[in-house]
Length: 366
Image (cartoon, rainbow, N blue to C red; front, side, top):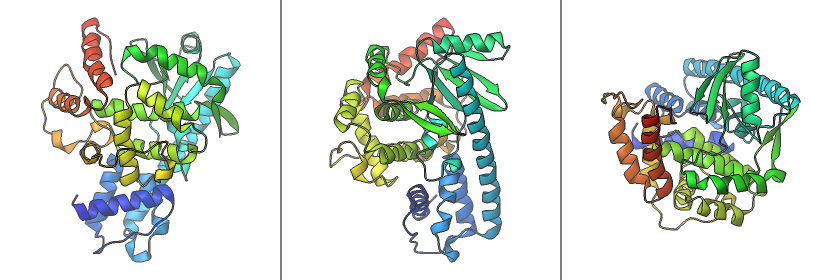
């Protein structure tokens, strides 16, 4: 995608995400251009956000009718999937509560509720984390009811429920550094009384407190950047959270959390991208980032890697390895190690150490 078309792509993304603005262009958008835009939107799982920009475009700026029809069919699929996910979330949350289990909805549909059009955010699966002994109690329920599930190193498990993929997480946050565990548990205790709820199919489903929602979503982004990359959807998640929760979180407390978890310098990079590329108003940030900060290199990595680096064209002919799941894994992981060691040193160092340990003991490590 050339720079001119890339600029149009991000204009559409911002218009769809924030529900305002007009598209400016120097030349008409061709059919091939629109097909390229759609391809990149799919790779970054932001098809719904781009689609939401169409109502703000002039007639001559819209995609051809045939492409709009295909896009509308895709949106119908996304809406139906989200509706089914909401049914399962409401059902499982009520079920777990009746069993005395306290689940908390992570990411996904919980974050979608902060979007202008929640039904257009693409969600892959349903993620639950649990309070107290909830994780073990949920496992017992699955076993007692003969529900097939896969266990990953005792930290996560997954299964299908009425055609929807479900994941249970023993850890609330995606920090790999084990030295942070005590502090993170302390945060969960301190913010327990500030947990929020989202109404899903008339069921009030539990969410983390605003500060911890932001920590959870943002460290998830960092986790994948250190490995194979992540797409624009997760950056849109972070932007919408900051925008909608800006009056409900404590800026000083959030900065302290980022500092004590060792990711503050990387958070500055994230904030810079959210403002400059995603369009988040600076007033929604909890604190300012350095004026001369250069986050262009990270933005370029996000742009090329796409959703979890799966379709990164730079490595489509890369070498496969028995030890890794992605082509050219050693080179990619080393490059990202060098990129992020300066900004989140403890998390960057922890990943290869834990990965090596998992290989030695024969356990899967995400």
